[in-house]
Amino acid sequence: MTYKRFSLVACVLFLVLSITAAVLTFVRASAQRGVQRKIGPVEKESRRQAASYTVYETTFRFPYQARASLNMIMTFPFTRNFGFHDKQNSQGFWTPEYTTAHPPNTFRILVIGNGMTCTVNLPLEETYPYLLAGLLNRKCKNFKSEVISLSINGHKMTDEVVKLFAHGQYLNPDLVIFQVVPSDIEFYSYLRFFHVLQREKEHELYTAKQNEVFSDQSLDWKIFSESLAVIKSWSDKNSVPVGFMVFPPIDTGKMGRNFNHYDSRTMSSGPVFQFYPKFVTHIQQNGFPTLDLLVTFREKAGDRYLASSQVFGGLNPYAHRLIAETLMSFLSEQNMFGCDAKIRPGDGNWPKESTLRDMAANDWLKYNVSHVEQLKFYQELHRIYPKNPWITAQLADVNFLLRKREEAYNLYNSMNEMAPGIAVPWYQMAASTRFPKRKVDLMQKMLQTAPDHVQSMQGLASYYTVDKACVLLTRLLEIPVSKEQHKTNKILYEKNQCAQVLSSVK
View 1 (spheres, rainbow, N blue to C red):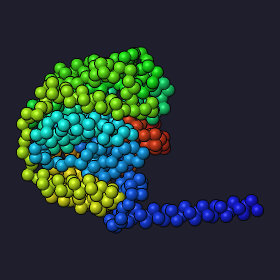
View 2 (view 1 turned 90 degrees about the vertical axis):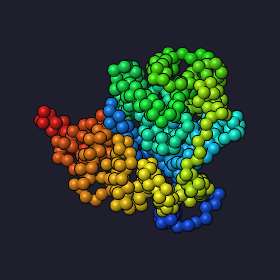
View 3 (view 1 turned 180 degrees about the horizontal axis):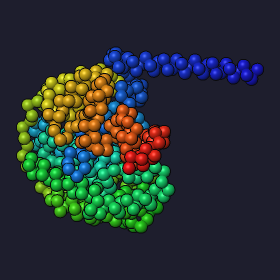
View 4 (view 1 turned 30 degrees about the horizontal axis):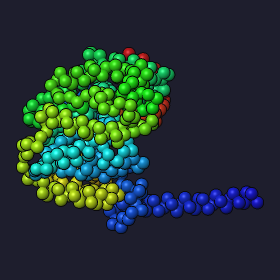
């Protein structure tokens, strides 16, 4: 009897799962075909979106001589990361919808930063860029102040530079603020390496690595210095003021580790805190007005808890309000913003583009579930901006996701002329062609430009002879992206007997 009941339950469960799978398959297929459906309030929390919220690398790279490497931009237009308060706009950032064209009668500020700006699990309306816009608009009513946050969790200094050159500069800003933390100078995610490699005492190893990173002779410090020089050159050339806002490490513990009793010996981020003054001073020596929030927090936060929680290291609403107020005063003191600011006329493309962007904001859910609808949207934008690399990349990505490989290939290829030295779409072109020889040629070209591009190394390893593949697998094992990737490469390394192959080659 027990066996029969178990069989009956199993059959019912199988039937339910089968029906659920069939329904989900139909919904996803409908979304891909662009089928129009009424979207009601119940669907606002649905996980049914056209693109999964995954990390992928864009066509843009760190374009300077110290090290040619592709950096993760991680923009996800029209997607939402469920469980967090983020909804990416049509440009791919967690910030109010904005136009590429400079709006009329508007002072445009870009904030370029990382997870300290786009705090996990905090509503957009409670972040300091959003609050700053409100403060500035209340202060100066003769023009509009627009604050655009180009901030993505996990980004480092090189990523910030890429965002300025690949996208930010095309927005013609009136002012740029870089939000940084000392650990942003790390060129690689060293703590992730130690974690994936399952090294014992990974935090001790990371501490030693941080001491090395902050040395004047390290690759990381040289790239940091070069980044500052390039930003300063861009600022001078374009007559756009650039300032920096430096965040100290935020301790999530509530056991007295606040800014009245900051003791680097008890801090998990001790080494970074130790080199904090050197980091701030180096930015100032490169000629940038610099807001040091360590001073602000010590003077004004006192015993107040600043972290968003003991789990997440971001900032809570009180800290964001404090930053917005302090930043507004700082901009005024540095003569970087004032009600007598010279306001430029609007860009000629603004009227037409603003209509499209308003539509993107109002119909966000429609675009969220359909790449077909997104394709139409980016095609219209591309007609307005045929030479804009950011919009071209977005159109190419949607074509690729819809398996329109030839269209995607041609769009990626066109980006080399638009942004030489920044746009490097070789890997995307390789993924868009069916011809093996062309794939190999393009991935090799990618590695010539970005030597540590993981996807190209993995792709080429499947085409190369064993000895050449082993060289790539060796490097991949040194710079693991994830545990799964590392495990796969380790299996391939051992299967091909790479240790013996490489020793015999030597």
